[in-house]
Image (cartoon, rainbow, N blue to C red; front, top):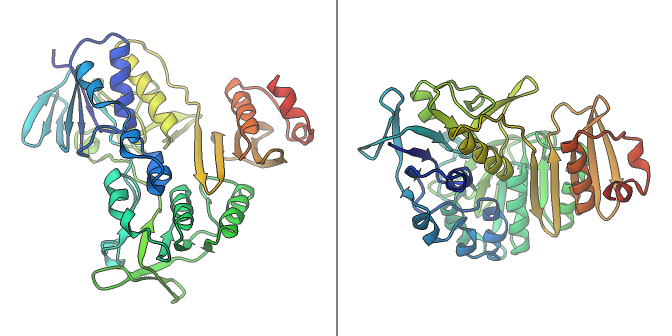
Length: 398
């Protein structure tokens, strides 16, 4: 037997390999990752690791000995250049590796600004890999001027770390408000107020014309013509699923690598999981970019490779640490039509669609998060009106 080959070296790949062994698979398991280090946690990169509060050894998902003890081969710092679905092989740095089953856990690298407007200048960074953060870390000097382009969670987290380290920070968002694609206006208002209280300047509704500088960034020119001085720039404008390898192999691509409910691509022996994989949810093909989804989906695909035959039912959850605040999110807030707001230990914002609870954002309110997650996953009913009851969360915790 040729065994199972997993392309990608992140959370999904590590979770899949571990689940295969936990379920008793005895064939060969090979993980092929482009980065030169074993699989590690990505979320702390823009939080605790960048702050210097989490050492490198705590980032890694498994100890160095674990891989060998479990018979999992790591090909690190290597790139799969092509897949031959007919021959059941992948090409890796000039070598050919055969597979019985192939899993694509290729993730979603960050969008970058075009070179023509300064995206390739020195001092312009994205936040995705350990190498990205290691390169930018020396820039975080007290008094340095940082411009963050993009008001999503990555940009906001980087801005928060920079302010905590004493930098001057301006965040620029082209959309009318921060968190425009991922959170309601009420959540955005709370996060904006948090940042402004800590000294972050937030510019919303204004685009970026270019990053200035000859070889190194020294400013950001806005669409208005105004130039913001900068010692360095962080770009956090979203991600794109890594589909080139799958597309070249003839797999169906639709908002990512399209998979069926069990995680199988259009080729019966090729699977996909994590940020790169799209699946149908209520008639819409979606991707969920989160650690929870990467773990849950990868583990299910591992079981289905071994014949479990189970469909994936996502239970989305996310979190973001900014300053002294923890934002915990349960559910998916797509197509919401009503928001209910509570103020308990912290603040919480409850999303409803046609009277049904679909998501909750809990800011420094673990109780609201736990209750909301339980209600959403259990399909239990609660009305927006019920949330005006001061004791409803306590009662639901019982």
